[in-house]
Length: 83
Image (cartoon, rainbow, N blue to C red; front, side, top):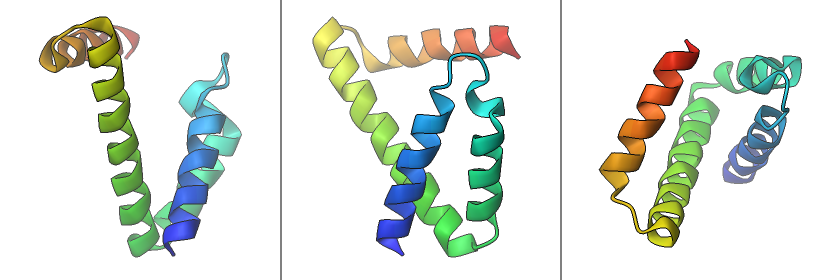
């Protein structure tokens, strides 16, 4: 199950990187539907995505010499503007 969660997470992140559709990509939607059918898989995918997000945040804030909360606030404002 962990391998499946990892593979699904990588597939989701790859599909989300589509420059035009992003999370609205049909592939992303299919992967989300597939993962949500199994509560245990869904939880593992979410956990894996959160772990990847935290690791990315740490890497970015270290490289940019910025405070993580500042970066998250900027991202939050950016996401709100897109909604």
